[in-house]
Amino acid sequence: MRKEPSIIVSLLTKGAHASERTSDGQSAVSICRRLTRPKDYHAKMEQGQETNKDRICIDVLEREMRRNPLAGDVSISSPTMADDLHMKLLYLENRVAFARLFFPSEAKLAMEIAHAETTSEFAGLSASKRSSGNLREVDLNETPIVQNQRLLSRMKALVKTVEMGQRYFPHCSQVLDKFMEDDLPDLFYLEKGTQDEQRIKRTRFMELKEDVQRAFTKDKAEFNRSGLSSSSSSSSLKDNLSHKTRKL
Figure 1 (spheres, rainbow, N blue to C red):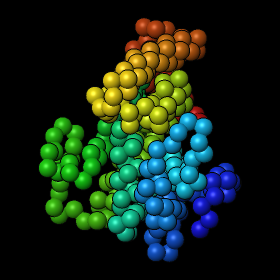
Figure 2: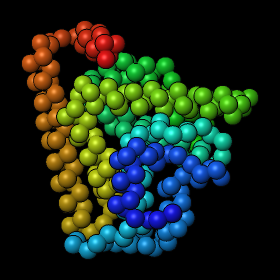
Figure 3: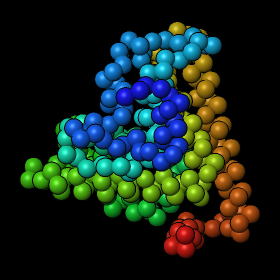
């Protein structure tokens, strides 16, 4: 496999799926990671310095798998495939969770249209130790096939939730896109780093809150221009979006 970013991007643009696998169950990203030394991938980059090609390849492939998690074969027939599915599910769960935090009304509507509430939340492999709320109690008699179907149902519901958000609340979705890609890793460690680094992170956090408010205002204004008054109830808005979805 050639670890050349331009070739990988070209193949993805022409319709190749990052989730496709070799006969022994390996994905492109797992092959890239196996052929890349950890110290090369995690090397600290200075501004203006060229990024390691191996790292670019891995980042491009992982981003594509998160963007289009249902492409290719997503069945769980090997430990590697199971890990990839869990990674995609955790990304989607986190994205939807932050959508509910930043834009609760919009996220609720998107989840209702996608029927996401009818599926069980995936919270990682340790969820069974602290199951609560909508987390599903582990069924020790559940077969691998049934588990596969349950996880895929949850993934499809989350993917549809994200799609509904992107279609009807594009500005909110753009804020979430940027947050998940650029800000989430840093904001998890607000209290770590030098004082200057902590100050920069807190400043960015405040900027993010402003971005959220601006996105909400833009999407609300667009809905008002479309003929939906600001006093429209969530149920009437849900009916309107559901009608549009059926027509598309």
